Image (tube, rainbow, N blue to C red):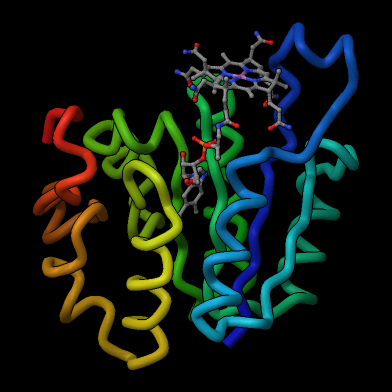
Length: 173
Ligand code: B12
């Protein structure tokens, strides 16, 4: 199974005066996935490498992933949603996942505005993403999604976010 990580091509930051860097958060997740046996993981850093929409679309199609994931802080949410929309356009069967700080706190807004997102991973993604990928591999992620702590998804047009993991007790549900 192929998992494709995309860092959206968003240039919101004054921090970029010092340069562009791939996000540390996304770098943590492939390690956890690889330890769990998901070794076919690819990463496209559209921000650092200035990859525009058309080229990104082409590269997503070429990668032909089973799962496409991206990340968002608040300034990059529109671009992140667009990444997953493009993934849905060119890889209809791929499962689309959003994570990161904005998605964690604003899942109730992000899911209705981008209904092509299959799931949002809230909070730290290492364990949750592995559980989610295992459910995708088993072909039953939509059947068991309510039992995966830390994800949110649209269920019949309504946002469902069953529970966060105990580690996240400081966050509100
Ligand atoms: C380090 C840092 C930076 C570094 C990033 C260096 C790098 N190469 O990664 C620099 C200095 C470049 C930076 C810049 C900016 N930053 Co900054 N940054 C941080 C900081 C301090 C830590 C982020 C981090 O690396 N955490 C460690 C990693 C491991 O955690 P993580 O990123 O959260 O990822 C985990 C989870 O969120 C989740 N996850 C994340 N993505 C995904 C995706 C999927 C699919 C899944 C499953 C899970 C998942 O799993 C990850 C692993 O557990 C946070 C504050 C904080 N304490 O979080 C602010 C923070 C993220 N930054 C913020 C902001 C606003 C910016 C700038 C826009 C500032 C500016 N105006 O220039 C720019 C944007 C740059 C850009 N275009 O991305 C805000 C975002 C606020 C918001 N509402 O979204 C934060 C929260 C600070 C704050 N409180 O205001 N930043």
